Length: 310
Ligand SMILES: [Zn+2]
Image (cartoon, rainbow, N blue to C red; front, side):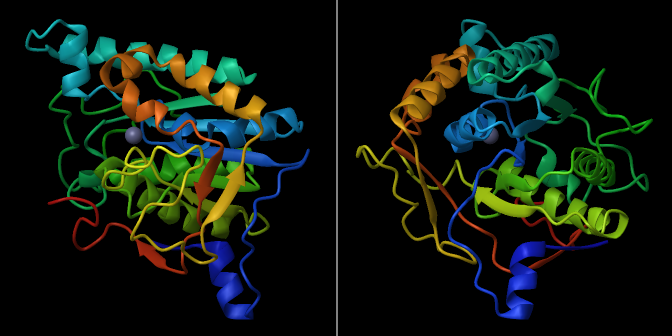
């Protein structure tokens, strides 16, 4: 299955420069792909608020519930060894926190979609657990091998890569985004890196089924060495040593009000504030940084896992 990063590819073919700005208007339809609940606010809480305030639409697709964060679960369970039930409970809490965070930005529960794929397992779905030719991936945390009741619409969805690509293609086609935000493939968390590959793969399907749909695909980043907490400035510089993709880094300056909204939304993630407040708050700055992916071709399943060991 071939997928193309549409905008940079067209730009490369036509020699039209890729813009270094993000335009937000009333007709903006923003789709944010969040590997875990909180990533959307860390990477783009200010921009999400801007789109909503401009009268545009915002949809967040959470790939996992974030239920495999062992240290976070242990903290909530006062150090005892977590059971699969504890991990499931933690995922439910993070879902509630996500609803609350979106509400803080002015959104409602219909703007959130939870696919409930395995936290910590997305990378393995890009190759080893791709299709029905082998058993589905089983989470070592929740012991699930498929989403429980979730917002997936395709029957018999299991923890397989092709099922996740299909779900994403369906969601993108139905929502019709003008702008998609998704982590960069260089993000050092394997789930974040894998999120990029799944979206790029799904866009291949979307281009065939909805040829008129050509969303602007933009990357955000959360995990990259010590970024951004190694820098205590008011603004956020891009991660050192990482290129700005097709157009160079895009710096979106936030208004003081947008910064307040972002901080308030992030604080709704009580479990995450409990576990790593310092990390979350290091993303609350006077700007957010984005980049556009360089032209590339993504084919899943990949011959080797692009984001983790097999
Ligand atoms: Zn994450």
